[in-house]
Length: 518
Image (tube, rainbow, N blue to C red; front, side, top):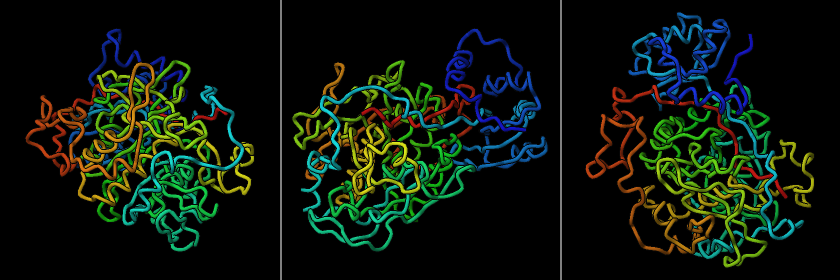
């Protein structure tokens, strides 16, 4: 029988969401109170239907997992970063499992899908260029940083996306100063791993992740130095969470973040880039995706995410993980086809605003319009969008906050190479307090200036006094930030006995960060 991942359209999720939170919800049995309403309704109407679920529990023992097997289910993923696991079982069995006192919350395993191709928003004031030229290296002062000997050497950036394809632009290559790395050599993609059961190949068949990675660390081998990333000697880790069509699931994303936490010391992972966004808005206090991202942040990893793009209803700024106040959320600018920062502006497709928790997002803007980067030779993009392919067939032009986020990830890598003892909070402050501001809708957003950030000497920290995700609270009150050093916190220190999972909403998420307009 077919396994249901969500009830699968965003429209259904949006229609049913009010029933999850609103006062009109009918009285439930105790077991139903710990089950996502969509799943509870399915269990009543079609109890034999096989479903994929995410289960959170109170204790780290395997008592609940044993119950799943007794009820005819199967464990599919360990998600210890959220003290849970993913499983496949019947809807009726899921409702029965919720009767176990060790179960906190059971929800459907939400869908992650690519929705960027549907965007028709126009933003550019000038016609799109046909030649493969980027301006962001000059716009952001990157060449001046390279002249200081900083190109990301010794720093590892993990990319949770659709994978990263092997390409000469990700070879070790040698570069000095402002000169490109032209000689292919040792591969800088040090790990390729997949977390999607339907996307077993580690190669990037979709194309999104390779493009993102090229902006972070492409070395320009295939273009003789014309198309290069921000940190062309950085090491890259490819954590693939999508299948060949760009589809993924929340459990895949959480599992990938869990892997980053487990392996951060082994590979010196200092930065994580995630150009993905939820399709359903909610407070960051009820999002396990945000909770997992904060755990990485508190353990010394700079987490950079895209703000997402405007959809038909407007800004989706309350979508996880972009809505989390700790991590760095990035919006997109348009360089208007010049390296002059003075004519740049905040794009109309980039999501922005104040979250329901009162935080302004994005935290920073970076170039995200008409960006050429590495084309995955395993993707179908060159056939589907030939007008976006460079004449040498090696690079592809894309727009979106997906392209802006890796600019900041590359900047963080350069900053951490220069000052490896900086905390994520200090990196965020340094990046946000450099350069000029861009205005949009009554807001002012810091505009990334990498050279200014590198040459600054401030050690001030961002995020002072911000309460952590409530799923991480060790009691009924927020953590005392004056007495806790979150840069050294570990997941084992979290008291799960105080977490209220009844408010958690695991809904479908999407790649809402690619803008396919001209």
